[in-house]
Length: 154
Image (tube, rainbow, N blue to C red; front, side, top):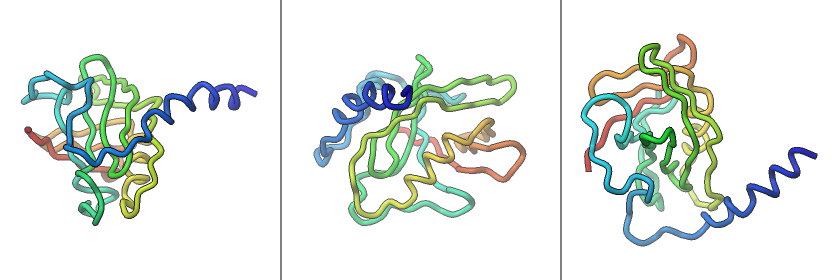
């Protein structure tokens, strides 16, 4: 019963994001006007470059690279290769802990980007991170990185 109620409440939110975005690439409204941050994790455009140890490349028909951005208001926004994503995060920089919660995506059907599911799985599984300059690694436990990102300055 709770699952049905949750699905009914989320359906309008998910359906409003299903429009095609074939026009010019723009940053999400929630990140407009933010200055690039040259230290830390917040307000940086983190572009996915490796997933489960394999390099990530754009595929034919993909509009732009997969990325995410952590906002000052504990929100995560991004793009998985086909669908826009947003949700929340919990960050503890002293312990290098990062957890993503309530990450939702639009429901566009796109040919190609097989990496989107892996990208979303990495966000959902990650519980800590490693930051080395402009390279961010999302990890679970002490295993090899789930995903590797590079900061992109636009």
